[in-house]
Image 1 (cartoon, rainbow over the protein chains, first blue to last red):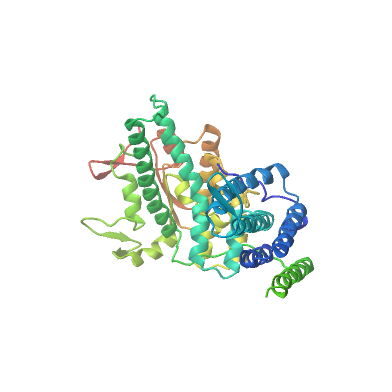
Image 2: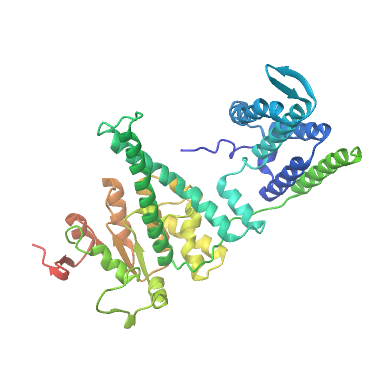
Length: 252
Length: 184
């Protein structure tokens, strides 16, 4: 059962209009992904930390997620400096550690963490349902939004089905080992899950037809835009412009 | 009533046009119905409560799910919301609007599905084993709600007591034929 630990809160960030958060988050992400200067990237990272602070997210939960992301990035650090072509700084055994490799790994680390933390503060501070409605308002095609919301709705059902099937296997003495029997059992479980999911999908479609569904989805959510949202947008746009100038002015 | 597999649910699905007959014709409200769009007016006037609530609650929140029917019928979001609140209140579910559907208990899901079907304002209600899996207290509440409703309904159930308390005539499906049962 996955939780949404950051979705409920009382901070300044939680009170902002979700549309502004999504738009700011996405613009920020695009910009950071395209930047190359360390000055800009460090500035972006600082901004992301400030946002996390403003959103008053649980530091333990943030740290846990950060470790997962940085664990993956660590993999880059192991591979890139050794395999990237360029001027070598020093050697580890037979492998030359190159300067461009280290610089690239550092950039990737800064970019990933900056985008990741910003998204945690801006996008994870709303529930998946709100995110779905926000995307709808931002003109993302209705079908995509509803696919997202339906997936969210039914992933819990699928998870429950799977635990039920696994439980049924376990109470009949099933214990996972590296044997052909185990692989076959897991394959059966997955297959059964797929079949049940498909049958359920058909039933949901029937239920929707019975309630008059004709292909159009309606959104009931209310959004309210306040002065605070205007200030927030202005501030973030300003910051982004500063970063853009940092990025471009000293590029030759 | 009828043994498992005798075709009770299929009968309901035939009425709602979810399943097409292999032979014979379907006549409802004085008209013969064949194509999918012939059944659309039927679905506005007859509501079907499915056996499994999870199949019926497909929106993330209770408010959206109950409002789904009215919105499809052409009501404005405001009207749909007001209607939803009224129905939830009537079923003792006031305050449930913003609850997340998959987090509800079995009994709550069943009641919310009933609310969702009633929001369509049907004239006739088809209920497919509505009390299966419910505890005594929820079953009692369901019975009260049912008896309070001002419309015709058809129930499929294995529970004779429940049927005796909520219906006037009992039918059974035996070997593909609908037979009237005379209660002792």
